[in-house]
Structure formats: structure tokens, C-alpha cells
Length: 222
Image (cartoon, rainbow, N blue to C red; front, top):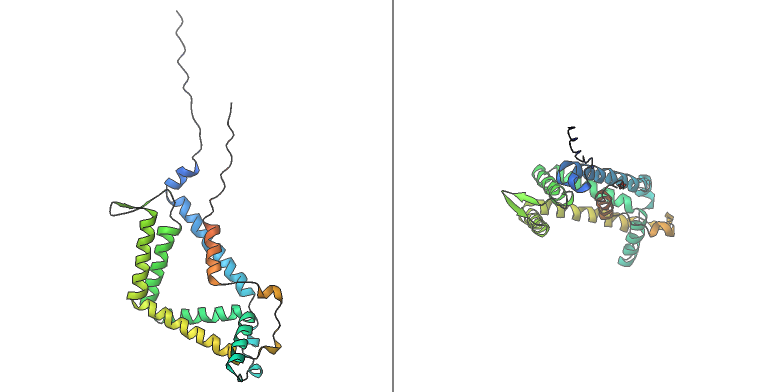
């Protein structure tokens, strides 16, 4: 009597899905962070490429005292439209010098930014935040980070350092714009409509960094 052949068990060779990769942790956050840094550096580099020659900014022959407050305001508006990127660089330099001269504020600010990036911006959406065995929802995480930000800004000297540096930077920009005669400056209409603010850099970088990578289509076999 011939023996019956053993049954053949089906073997599944399915590839891990995007959800399984997200549950594993690191492979999702690291590319997003690298994409954020890469896009941010590219946009900042492109913005700095649009700056005006520094020789025009400090041309001593183009400085004159405004005759009235309205003339000073008009000069500030025209000079801001022309030297916008240069003014942003000046304010950023003043902020950097202010933070470097206050190491404690710099360390606290870097820790705050790292908390926002790794606990909220680049944390996988299907992986909740767990601290000391307690699971926090997205709303609770946002509220926690918001409270931490308010504490750092208003109850430490970080806020005073930032506000003081910003006030000094704005004062320098306004003084330069009021005394710089803008008659020799020409700005195209297309350049007037451009916005190259720092927040737009972050917004665009974060948007491109959080876009999930494309998953190759799966062909079903009949």
C-alpha cells in the first residue's frame, strides 16, 4: 500500500509594509530628520545667494539724515525690500553672538528644539510617546511641549536673551534703513513679491521632511 504524500504547506514571502517599518522605530525618524536638515540647508543657502553685495549696504556715500519721520519710514520700507536677506543675516548674527555669550541659554534652547523635533515633529504617528510607563496622546504631547516652551521662554533667562537680541537687531536694521538713501537701489517687481522669511524655510523643510517615502506597488498573483 503506497503511502500518501505529505501535505504541502503554503509559504508566505510577503514583504514588510510601511506600517511595520514605522513600528520598528528608527528607520522612519532618521531619514525624516536627514531630509529636514538637508532641505533646510538648501533653502538657507538659496536664500543667502539672493543677498545684496555688502558693499552697497555699507556705502558711506549713500548715508544721509532723513528730513522727516515719514521720509525715514519710506526709506526703511524701500531698504527692507532691497536688503531683506542682508537684514535677516544681520539679525541672525546678533542672535548667534548673544547666545554664544550666554552658554546656559544656548544649551537650554538647543535642548528645547531637540525635544520638539524628536518628540513631536519626527516621531512616527502610529508610535505614541511613553514616559515612565504612561502613554501620552498627540494632544497631550503637544500640551506638554507647549508648557515646557512657555516655562523656558518666560521663567528662565532664555526669553530675555532672545528678546534683547531681537530688539538690538531690529534697532540696527531700522537705523540703517532710515539713514541709507535708497535712490540708487532698483528692485524688480518679481523680487518685491518674494518672501524669504526664516519661518517659510522651516515650514517648507518640515513639510518635505514629513512626506512619507513612496512604497512600491504590490502585484497580486492569482
